[in-house]
Image (tube, rainbow, N blue to C red; front, top):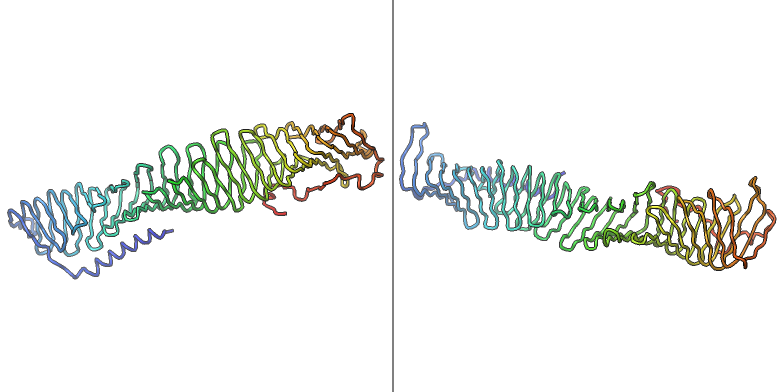
Length: 506
């Protein structure tokens, strides 16, 4: 698909061609103004004047100089040899070894060490066809454009003198003090300092990062621009930004990405996805929103976490912080959770869950005012529930083992909950069973501290402090109000069961 700037160049070319046809009949005469010697030659079967010594021609506003020439007076054209120089007005000059000029079509075919100088830039090539009607040149045997801000080389190219626009094709390389561009097709506007890339293109910013794109606009002075068509920015330390479109400002160290955004940190096996992102270079950070979620895939199972907004900051290779705000939900096969905001600090390996947090691990549900989850590598090691701690586990359709207190600490092994310590005003409701699995009774106990021990994902025993007291009700005879502790809610209906559930709103 053609972009707007490419269409503009094609339109300019078509206009130039149209002008060539329109003015083809408006012929003006090429005038010989000076030559030290003049002779005639008919031996070749073509009559022409042989001119030698400081030869000078004039055609309209163009002066053309050379050491010697064959002047085809009847055809209004000439061949120029040696120290060829063309001066057109006060804006264009050109030098070469030889040139053929047709005064009727106003086409110059310039060959050998060609240099076209447009004051602000120079074009170097071995073969150039220059069309004075339309004021553009075409090179087809390799060329180099030198601008105050960059150099461009390619195999083929057009340069539009009045527009100060050039288009390069095949093996294009633009070199700037800050970056190098390699592209299939590149258009440069010297007036606006805008370079347009079309086709597979790479931009190399030293050993810091690389840009891949197939459609881009870049300001070669400010190092800012826009990337389209699913472009990629990759840093040398493993970070990568991919999106349908990316707007970047290198001077400010900011990049904004839109639609199908993927911000990756392969060193930490983390990928943030969404439809809008802002990334900062110093410190390295990213904010992702609009259907945002994060993937952490360093372990055996991938963690998926969604929130309205996700923030990720890498202060150094060890200290990195990930924050999630509003409607936070996460899913991993062995662990799920929800809260309103979440913070993860890699340096301390702590996941902090705030505002109505719920943490599920196998058959257990944990709630409180806030929850701290301490990680051992990629696996949960232990947790700390602060304020209104409540841990529940379903025993059967109607009965739930419960443990409540001011705070709680739980310890895990191989991702299974093995021990829970309930601290401060500890209360428990559990349903002991005999060896055959029959319900023995309903036990409710209170104390300053209690510990429960799990085995095979089931409650094995409860250890209470000496000051604890309780009551055992026969099966099915406990008052209903004794079966549920204050604040009990069973939230299985909002528990993420698969990755896509993290996007559900309740």
